[in-house]
Amino acid sequence: MSRLAVTDPEIAALVVAEEQLQADTLRLIPSENYVSHAVLEATGTVLQNKYSEGYPGKRYYEGQRHIDQVETLAIERARTLFAMDHANVQPYSGSPANLAVYLAFLKPGDTVMGMALPMGGHLTHGWGVSATGAWFRGVQYGVEKESGRVDLDRVRDLALAERPKLIFCGGTAVPRAIDFPGFAEIAREVGAVLVADVAHIAGLIAGGAHPSPAGHADVVSTTTHKTLRGPRGAMLLSTAEHAKAIDRAVFPGLQGGPHNHTTAAIAVALKEAAGEDFRVYARQVVTNAQTLGEQLAARGFDLVSGGTDNHLLLIDLTGKDVPGKVAAKALDRAGIVVNYNTVPYDTRKPFDPSGIRIGTPALTSRGIPASEMARVAEWIDLVVGAAKSGDEATIEKVRADVKALMDVYPAPGLPVR
Ligand code: DSN
Image (tube, rainbow, N blue to C red; front, side, top):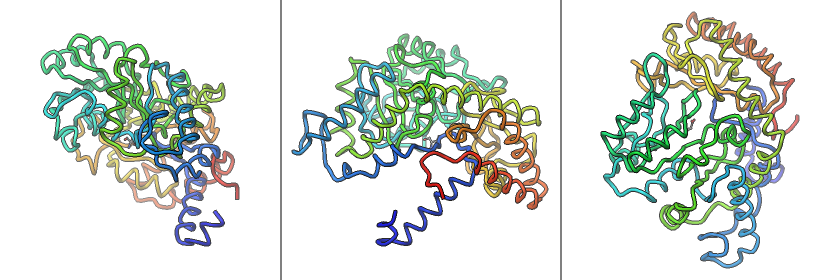
């Protein structure tokens, strides 16, 4: 950082301030994590200086002797870790990765089926405001009102009625395990390509803490920076049958040169995720989320689907009489970082919804054990109550307590000051 501080002290100061914020706060956004020093180092290398349009051994620029090896290592590690025939590690992030899937298999106007955004899906699964909903015909399944879970019989009925060419399973606010074999059966029945968007749970799959889509999904789409604990990037994995279509769609279909420094950092993260420590981490993420869920439920919080099978909890705050945004902002003031979120069948608007979404990947990366989850739940309870009554003193007190716990469990990848 010393050179950055000389060249651009304003940016350097902001980076240092962000480091401090990440060190001092309890980060419960389920799509965020802390990467290792090794991953951070790889992202800051001279590999970013190189253009490499094409794929290893078939580039449109010379001078690829090292880049080809970096990308080949990333590809091989991804294939092995996720037990898929083919891997493309070039997508810039999750949304471009999913767009490449459309380009590979659909023509404009074709039908795609995915989970509705307010039910826990993702914009790129055919939701109206996204290009995928504007250029394709999106049909959307949801979760049942009572159970908060997907009913596959209803998904099958919708698929049989709408005959989608592409089916997405997975999402961004799905607290329950995804039934990949069940979705695969439906996709086979209607002749659709099944895409498992495992961005949120990729690390859990890699660590054996969630069932794998391998052998069920035709394509697996994932970001690399959530539970997988890598750099901001994405990968598309597929069966051998679809390898060429996926590669052509990513480049030259959608993107130009891959971000080689990101590719290197993905390779590093995949190596880390293949280790025994990561298996322990993945299991602990789930244990922490389940324990936190039990502790919150004991304090009267309404968990969508009643709990979690993974890293994420979706909480409907209607019964607490506090809107999600008000709660999220109060929690932020208390050093607990969450995001406000719609809940299934929400009667409020997406920018001012009824719920919050929380998760345990980042706190588990700090080594915070399940025995601390009662304390975390207690803080959330106190702050949500304080948000309603306007009790800023309680919020201040929680902020100090949070900081004290964070000092006991330093985050990986951050400088020790
Ligand atoms: N923005 C991501 C999330 O927070 O889940 C999804 O793209």
